[in-house]
Image (cartoon, rainbow, N blue to C red; front, side):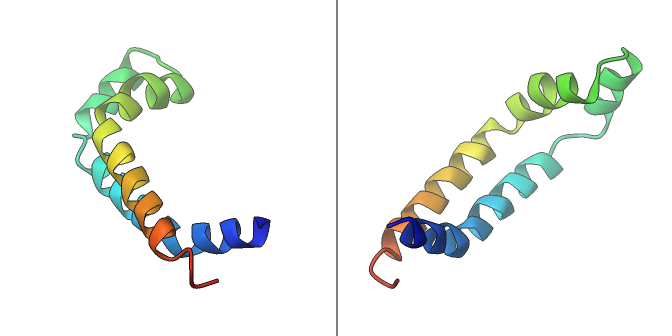
Length: 76
């Protein structure tokens, strides 16, 4: 059973990565720069600035990854 989950994850993970990368690339660079100017740590900037701004891409990527994994369930 675990090998099936890993195979499905391996096949579907590029859909998640592509969606999250596009969502994070759409954030203007001035926003994280402003957080750095205010001396926010990198972890704080990621969790409190970047992740909330890209939450639609994260959720969309998860949905695409999940549906692709369900569609490929019979292949392994």
